[in-house]
Image (cartoon, rainbow, N blue to C red):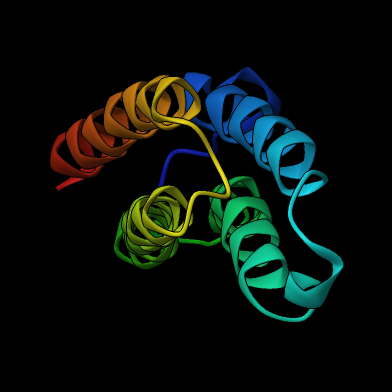
Length: 119
């Protein structure tokens, strides 16, 4: 049986919230033509990280919680790819990319370690 976690106290959830805010801030500068494209994709992937973490805490077993953590991890990798595209098409600067990349790598690592600890 899973030990119940309070998602609001999990560092990975807090970092996911912070990353989501940063993604919303950065995508606000994207061209209007990207509203239903890259902007939407980045925002949805960012929001899915803390959302999956919080939803997973309500599951009855660690096995089920891990599935939600893996979805959150997948979204973190999705964001990384999308930010590379945003950099390549010059929607974000190298400096913006590096800062977001650093946050994403930290979050990816922390989620992966949390999953390992639950196994």
